[in-house]
Image (cartoon, rainbow, N blue to C red; front, side):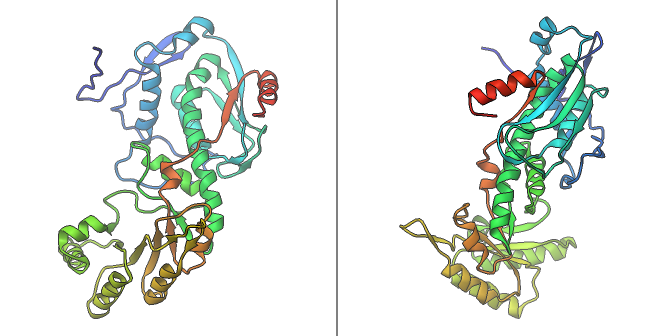
Length: 353
């Protein structure tokens, strides 16, 4: 049986062709990825330890393996130069343009990338919205990694845009239900789509959820423990508590009216009730928002869909969080083609362009 072994230095071979040389890169390198490309209209969210360049290198390395692209090595002369065009095969919001530039730059800094659209723009099926020119071998090596990121990010951005528009005046948030290793990439796509970011991870916001409450022995005990911890550690950060009943909401409100607390937001979990006819009952959610009466930010969670988000947004909640933005994403179909005329002919035949 074959085995995959990762060394302690986390070094993975990554092969690109530059002229006739083979260059090895390492995931262990943590050079600043250079997030200053002209195409960057929406900056990625900040994270204290996330290595974007490392993620790019890992994605390229898993594709290249220990030999590089054997098909390119066999069929494409090293000195051949081409121009390839990005083609939208579905309507949607394009995202990942800035990340695509980083990937092309990582593979071959001499590649020239141009765009007619920017991150967050709406693209229609059949639109050519960008091109890359330079050494053919390196364009094809980068192609699948670029498209994997762009298609996923564009799918997230497209759904986020639809949800964000429907949720107004509430703001739409994602959750931590992101693809492992792609936390920052997924959350960046949400920003591009017009959403807002929830906490980045376990480190940047206190979020008291049901399991914390159960272990602490009740919702007030949990809040008290958080207040004490933040004071002892001399920390200031947002604090959110999950409530599941109106009784819990009332309990939190009574406690915070009598005691100084670091609490900033109350999550109203599963207070949107599905009905047999496919509609939802938001009366419980409305009652909770009225009880809170602006004393804290509010966040609706649970039973959030494209069909329900507008009704939830009309209840007065500050935020609506949806894990589906990132955990159930449908990729937007995008291709990168050298022979665009043939690609369009095939697309018309299959009704994909």
